[in-house]
Each structure stands twice: as C-alpha cells, then as structure tokens.
Amino acid sequence: MRSPAPASAADFRIAFLDARSLIGCRHRLRLDAENPGVLAEVREDPGVQQRRDAATAHRGKVRDELVAAAPADWVVIDPELRGAAKAAATMAAIEAGVPRIWGGLLPQEPDTGRRGGVEFLLRDDDRGGYIPIIVVNHKVTDPRRPDPADFHPLTSDLFRWQPRRDKHVKLRPQPRDQQRLAHLYRMLQRYGMASPALIGGAIGLVSDRILVHDLTNVLADYDQRYADRIAVVRGELPTQPSKVPECRQCPWWVRGPAARHSDTAEPSCEATLTRMRDVSLVAPGSRADVLRLHGIETVDELAAWEGEEPDDWQHGPFAETVVTARAWIDGAPLVRRFEQVSVRRAEVEIDVDLESYQEDGAYLWGTLLDDVYRPFVTWDPLPTEDEGRSFGEFWTWLMERRAEAHAQGKTFAAYCYSRTAEDKWLYESARRFAGRPGIPTHEEVRAFVDSDEWVDMFQAVTEQFICPNGKGLKKIAPVAGFGWRDPEAGGEASMGWYRRAVGYDDAVDLSQRTRLFVYNEDDVRATQVLRDWMSKRAVDEVPSLADFGR
Image (cartoon, rainbow, N blue to C red; front, side):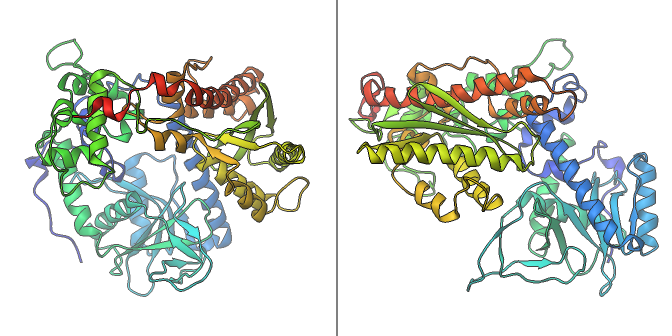
C-alpha cells in the first residue's frame, strides 16, 4: 500500500534528511543546514573518521561473506555509480524481483526530503515487497545462557531467512537502528515495495545472525521525529544550543557560524551558553530538559533553588545538582561529599591502564610499580594472535607481584580509572586466548576483578566528589597537580597514533609508538598521583558540601 502523497515540493525550501540526522542535536542540524560548506575545511575528528573506516570495512566483509554463499541470488549495486544512476539500478533490481540486493540507494524525495541507502534489501517471498536490513559496526545483541525470560528477541540465520525466538541472546537497545529502519521502510512504502510484515533487520558487529526489529510501534515515533527534524532543516522551526554529550566532538561547540550579511563570526555554542549561563552547562542532556520544565533556565536560577526537589527528577540527588551549580559559579572544580576523603591503599600498589583499538583488541597493558613503568605490548596490527602473548605476559607478571606480596605478608592493590574497559578486555582476552601460556580462565579473572584488590579510582572519585566539569581522568588529575606531556593526549587521538604506529595506512611510524608509550605511562602515573592527593591533600584543598549549603 502506497503512503499518501505529501505536499508539493514547491511548498518547501528544498532540503534533504537521512536517517543519521534523526538522532542527536537538533541545533547542530540547523547550523549544518544553514551554513553549507562552512565546516568543509575543518579537520574531522580522527576518532569519527576511524569509526567510519571501520564500519566500511565491516560492511565489506559481511557483503563478501553473504554474496559468496549464494552468488546467483544477489545483485550488488556498483558503489562507483553516481547517485541518480545508483538509485535507478536499485529500483530496476526491485522491480525485477531480485531475491537479495546489496548496496541499494533509494530515490531522493524532494517533497518529503527523505534520502537514504540500505546495505541489504531482502525480498519477502511470503508477503511480497522488500525487508530493509542494515549492517552496523556495533553490537546489537549480547550472549545469554538459555533460561526463562519475559522476552526473547527475534533473530534469523544469516544466510537463510527463518526468524525465530532466540533464547541465546538478549537485545541491546539501539534506537538509532530502529529509526533508520523506519526511515527506509517509509521510503520503500512510497513505491509500494515495503513488505507488509512491518519488520526490518540489523546485522551487528559479531555478524552471526540477523536481529529482526518489529517496526509496528516504531513508525509513529519515527513520523513525529522526522516531521520535527525536516522542519528544522527547512528553517521552519527555531533551535537553541544546549549542552549534550555530542558537544564533545561537535565543531560548532568551539566555532560559530558566520553572521548573516557579515564576515564576522557568531559566537560558538560554548560561548553562547556561557554568556547565557545556561543551566545545561552543569546539568547537560535530559537533566536540563527537566529543569526547564520547572522554569530553571540558568545556572544562577538552579543555584538559588530552595524547597523540595521536582517530582519528576530522576537524575540522582537533586541537592547535589544545586551544589554543582553553586560550585560552577564559584569556579570550584570539585566538591567533597564527606568530611574525610579516603581511598584504599596497600603496601604493594600497581597502577594499570590499557590501550585498545576499536573492537579489534587490546594491544597495550601499561603498569606502574615502585615508580617504574612497564608496558606489555604487541605491535602486530590488530586483530592478531600475538595479542594473546602480550596479554599472557601482563597477567603473569601482575599475578606474580600479587603472589609475592601475599607471601611476604604485605597488602596488595591494583588500580585503574574507570574499570569498564579493563574488565571487558580482561574477560575478552581470557576467552579469546584460552589455553595459551599465561592466559587465565574466566573464573580466575572474575575472582580478581571481584576482589577488593582491584580498585577503580573513578568509583572512588564518583562516590566522594561532585564534579561540575566532569569526572574523566583528564578533568580530575589536573586538580591533583598532574599534567600530560602530550597536549593532544586523549583516547580519540590515540586511535590515529595507533594506526600510524602499526602502518595501517602507510609505512610504520616508530615515533607514534613512543608517543603511545608516553601517553599510556602518563595515564598510569595520573592515577598514582590522584591516589596520593586524595590520601593526603584533598580534604584541605577541596571545599565540602557544607561550604555550598544554605
């Protein structure tokens, strides 16, 4: 059934919107639309480019595997074709009833503004039409042991379309995937080519099955969201900046667009919000949305709040949010929650920090013991079997130091900052390289990470401090007096350094290996400095909640 014809294109400023723009900042969407080409010379964040490259490589791998399994079923649209030719080739394959189409591009819709392509179009042999299937470079499910559950997701074999309830995985919510599938469904529906089944599929990072999404309850939300976003792009709805996580990588955060009818630049989002003293500076994202519903627009209004907290506040203790505003006004980077500050100490202390690349593996485990930095590393490009060797050496060394401390009757502790990544790669490495020299079992990893000898400094900071400017190590360690030697040090930048260090794109650059060692060493030294500061000076140097109370 064809969807009703929208209003004439002549009624609108011609603008197009793809599914990527349905999630994220509305204000950025407007700035991009109103200032085409302004950011063309801005260097893209290396991390964003690397993730895009990784996604392209992943899709190519999935394509080759699928097509090789049944070449006669497939039409692969030539990726070198220009847009109009690619869309024509896609529609010709659809009209011919090709069972499986790879790399399709659907015709742009000047009246609705929709545009978009899809990795995989699957003909619905039972109901007619096509099912859109996207290939994404993130996980769409997690493993689960078969057990009773209220809900089991629908999945299909990768090569044979047979959707069934899957007791072996649990769903990873991915709203962006559902919005994209709804977008593609509406585009197929326009030409009467959408399967009546109201479903779409996603092949994730593991690419071992197709996760089937029921779009029945998604389409209404998509339609409302799309109507709002296309109106923003057409200039029919105003927007205002507000701080959200996306701001960290957005060029508009620090760069303003050119003023209308002038060569001068308008203020950046950061400058605008700072001038406005906007409440999102201390309560970003959805927290700011809740506060605005209660008439709180500025940091000063939040700092002056008295009385009961809002009934709909679900973002932690509201009193601490008020204190965060007061600390921001006073320029205090931290506020103590308690009279005393404590952190677990031991007679033998080791600091640990890892460096990984995408989902390919962990290539470097850095340690600090008795002021001596020891890295355990592989420079074979990931993924590599040599990663098992370096991880095994790291684990063996760590456990030997632990055993020595115990044998000498000494206390032992190993420290990291935000253990999520370390825990993930400890377990993942134990699984991938099981049975090789030095590799622990899953149970051995669990016994260690669940013990009080594995200390997360991020948790210690979170529990004891309010942090108006963020809780990342790069924000907190400078308060303790630590500074990184490399001014560009950061997780995103290190991805580019790693590519050059192992020669992904060109010849191996040995200087980047040195740079990564320096960065990793500074990270472990930062946790050591932070721990000493918390134990000795923090209580005297950081104001307490009582200092900001009323």
